[in-house]
Length: 173
Picture 1 (cartoon, rainbow, N blue to C red):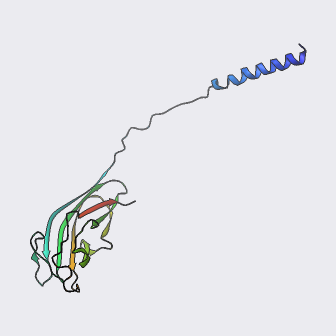
Picture 2 (picture 1 turned 90 degrees about the vertical axis):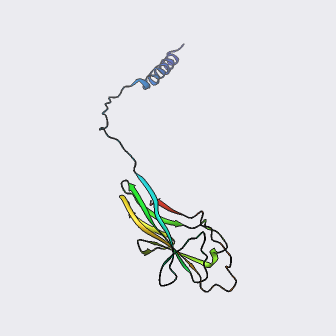
């Protein structure tokens, strides 16, 4: 073998030895423990209490029982309750919604539904509570108005199914 070939083989062997040792190079390192503590999540809850139904059509409000009493065009029926909101958490804000999407029945097209929270008429059946801190009780009302302009014969012997009605409390982004 000539000297150039021997030199090329030796250079190749040296390159293999050098590249195989790259994984064993040690760097200095150090570590420290994170300060003691716990991260905990908060909560958001809704409870509805003291619900009542009232016929507020006339000058004097009268009790109303949806299971028994019947309404006619022009009647205004009010559902009143207390929404108890509890929450705990940094930056927690929420919206209270009267979820009427699942209310059904033949009477529905002849009614308008208004939602009041703390005597404030809301838009689109929802009310932005803003920051939620600890405990908050809000008077809520749903007002069902049977359209007084309902044509004769329409809406007679019809029902409004309230079985799937609910209030929803949702955290704001």
